[in-house]
Amino acid sequence: MSKSDNMEKSSNELTFGSDNPNAIEVMDLTKIFTGKKVIEEVRAVDGISFTVNKGEIFGLLGPNGAGKTTTINILVGLLNQTEGDVFVGGYNVKKNLNKIKELIGVCPQQASVYQYLNARENIELFGNLHLLKKEVIKERMEKFLNLLGLTKAANRSAKKYSGGMLRQLNLIVALISDPPMLFLDEPTVGMDARVRRATWEFINSLKETNKTVILTTHYIEEAEALCDRVAIIDFGKLVALGPPKDLIAKHSAKDLEEVFLKITGRRIMEGI
Image (cartoon, rainbow, N blue to C red; front, side, top):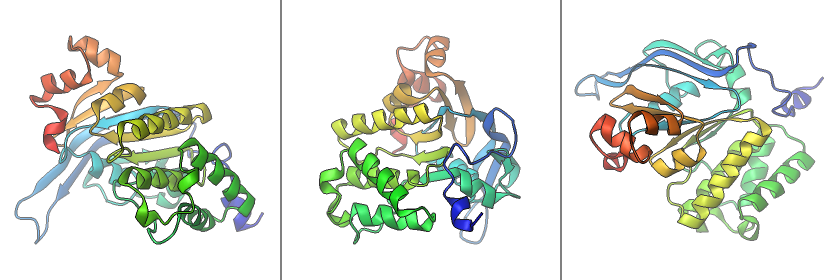
């Protein structure tokens, strides 16, 4: 089998590193930033532990500086942890990062597309980087453009896109290889209410293909609408974990925003 054939596997054919039902395992994860440019030691992530089930939409909630993005960056191999163990798809992130990269798609906070290219050119470029066949790229591209309402703007230079449209294109690029696991870091920032709702529907539909989605967000209603379970992180510590409805009931709150307020003493948007 050629390298190209290997890279054209669908998410159903890509295999996890173990039969463990957990897509992700995080154990006592700690990240401390030190160095000449750091005035004092910063403990960005402070001994957190959680698991993510296969096929689950799992939310990480917290204001800026809470440790969400640092945690995500460790999970996808962009940062090394100071302490603790992390397994993604059954693989140790320190030892098997190349295996993990085959299993994940990443949609970062900042748009990772080339703004002088149009949507179709961007998608084709990233599809080619994954060594996908042209017909596979075209089929997936047209499907995603249609589902996210970008078809009419697909031939327009990305530099002319709104912030919300850039994030939607970013999402398509992350999905073009059909990864079984998707990391979405603030995917709907900059979207108007209509586009955000359409993007929610699209993200929720990913469960039909048994994808595991890890979502970070400042929008409490987004987590409440999409996530099977949420982890609330504050000052680098995990302060609550569970299904939104269970957390709301446990804290006698009217919604997840009130849960966050009761636990942390502040509203989630205060950290922005």
